[in-house]
Image 1 (cartoon, rainbow, N blue to C red):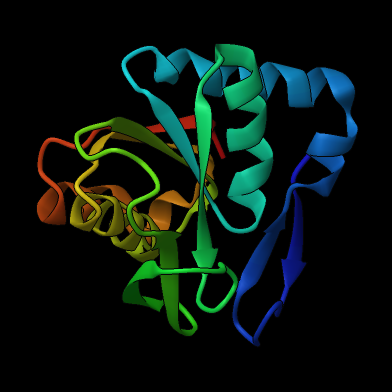
Image 2: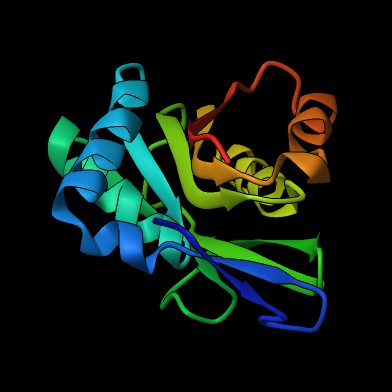
Length: 167
């Protein structure tokens, strides 16, 4: 249910298209319920823009948790905290609102695909900078050959990484 789109968004990248999965109500529901199981020890669930929003929001509804959007630079109104990082095909910056969530709150981070780990690491560092406590990372799927899991373990010791679907 995951389509591979070669050379998107740049030549040499194989894009993982989750659209068929989220269009199937049973598969989508099952994935969201599995993600929600990792939210027991958190106060909030953060979703990384854009496709992480889909799963994180659904998990919030299922668990009664608040949602924290982790957005691309320039997309949030008001004061923000930002974190830049390297992607497998360039650079990017993530932002969250500053002062919106009380410091010390525990946050689960959700995204769709774990590739190189740069986005996940930046998201966790951003939450820490905001005074929040990341409880773990959950992804729909992982591209194992890119080695993100070991990179995350090296940079963020103690942060558990979970994947819902095996590739």
